[in-house]
Length: 55
Image (cartoon, rainbow, N blue to C red; front, side, top):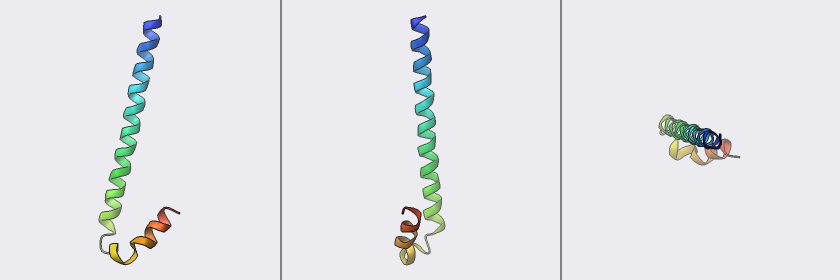
């Protein structure tokens, strides 16, 4: 019984961390696409855009 509980807890921790890393990975991909799309405006309005995005 105790062993099963430990196994379930371990599985839960593993899936939780995997979901978390996937979330971080998609955030990085979104940021990369965002920078790629706005490379032409990068020098003109980067500070304004970053202030709009991160108030």
